[in-house]
Length: 505
Image 1 (tube, rainbow, N blue to C red):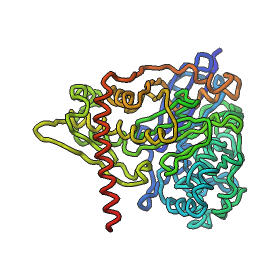
Image 2 (cartoon, helix red, strand yellow; image 1 turned 180 degrees about the vertical axis):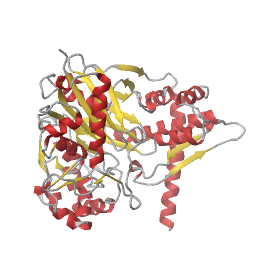
Image 3 (cartoon, rainbow, N blue to C red; image 1 turned 90 degrees about the horizontal axis):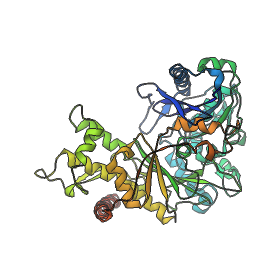
Image 4 (cartoon, rainbow, N blue to C red; image 1 turned 90 degrees about the vertical axis):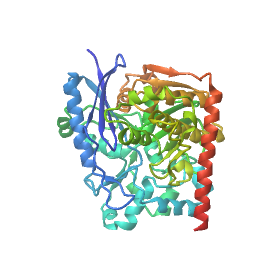
């Protein structure tokens, strides 16, 4: 009789759910809910909140739909894995009730709190112990609550991350992981413990930190009530949880130095694994404990986020392309245009502040447009090249940290599906790009099989991932390099102009 594993991916847009056959490692079924994006509450500019209860309600619907579509019976599902949006803050009261809406990853209200902490504690202390500035991460968000909503903080029993909340709803137990603690920038990598010095600085009680459990472990059993809501069997163990980017890397079988996971969705992410603590002196890249981190064998995930990525391309499709034009249509048009788009260039940073550009809000720029020479196809290619070039610009930061990629693995559901996009990055990095058939929810499902003994290790759990397509280094590298260097010069000229304008004011 076949055994199955179930995984959930709790995003800010929707909940994804997947079933994996534990014996064959085959992805049996994937679904998501709701059909339209979940709403974000924004009472003031820069604020972003969601109700955790909404995540749970949608997750329950996604779970029942998954079982209905697959025909798999609840008693055949042996474990549960959870992936979730990183850096969010969920506040739980005495009876694990939610005290206020979650302050999610895209909320920027605590930026100044993090900056002041970094200045007061000092660069050496923060980078040596935390690998990061306290920044606009989970603990800084909690400090904002302490300062601005003291009556809420007074009722606080535990603060947790979005995935911890979902696990708590299933099991009744509020706990977290080292990987989760580190994504809140609260793990002391030097002393291998919760960073008490940061709690002391912010004036936050250590008792508010949830208990820590291993990433791959029996983290609690599914209670009767939640089991009925989910359509699952009571007693099914929750055995894995991780933030979406570490989990995405796991889903793509990225565990070791030289391996890089990337995504090209609304924002772009490059996630590199190293085997020793390392930090970027300008805080453009953030380091977190990877899913297979341990004190005796450290694995650190270095995360680069590129805000101006897929949002640029989707804007073009919506606002510039003819009605009914698909991404496949755009790709066919692009393939008729040579590398460098006959001199047309696009700077794609029109989606807000860019961490890798020192949080500058540069905007998108179109450069060297000629009305009698360039058409829509040129525009599409220049935009796609601009996004690819922004990935390369960010990856040069990795080069400066001594990180040399051997392979880049990506999912088959984002910008990397474009041959032009993937070939451009392969040419400029000298790396093979492997397109993998998987999802974050399926990766979480597979990972959940480790703690129940279905697999001996996380590597074995993900050993069955299939490479759908690979892009090798192009034989026209010089053309790509020349186009990139011109684009980079444009970008740096804009950055200089922005700095001069700021200085003159």
